[in-house]
Image (cartoon, rainbow, N blue to C red; front, side, top):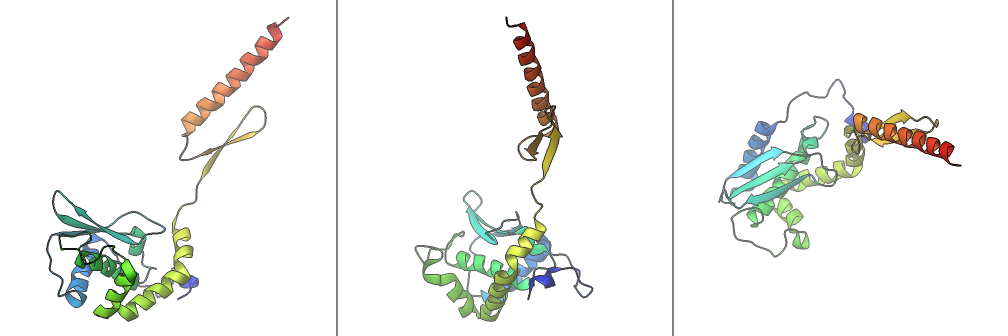
Length: 199
C-alpha cells in the first residue's frame, strides 16, 4: 500500500473504530490467537494519545491489578489498515502472556529479549498479518502521521520598530504577547525620556 492510498477515496469503507470496537477486537484476538493465555486479571483497553514513535503500550495498575492497554489514537482512523490495530493489540497481549503489564509470572528478563514478541506473533498464526503490518508502517507511517498532526502555529505581532515578534502557540497566549509588546514599548519610551533629561 502506498502513501497515495491514505486519501479519502469513494471506495473507502466508512466505519468507526472506537473503544467498544477495540474491546471486541481484543476479545476476538485473545480467543483466536491466545486461547492458552489465562485471564489472570482484568484488562482495560482504549485509544490514547497520538504518539509518533509508539503504537501501543501495556501497564499494570498496582492498586486495582488491572492491565491497561493503550493504543495510539491514530489507529482508529479509517485510512489505517485494521492489521495495524490487530498486531498492536496482539503485541501487547504477548507482553501480558509473558508477565509484563499483568499479574502472570514473568517468562523473560526483558519484554523484547531476543525478538521474542515477533517470534511469538508468528508462532500464534499472525505471521502474514505481521508482514502486512510491517510493510504498511515502513511505506506509510511517517507520511500518515504528519498529515494527521497539526503543524505548529505562530502568532505574528507588529512592533513599533517595524520588526515582527513571533510567538509560539504553546509559549504565550495573545494576551501575554500583547502585554510583552506593551511593556517593551513602554520601556523604550521611558528610556527615550531619560535620555532627553540627561545633561
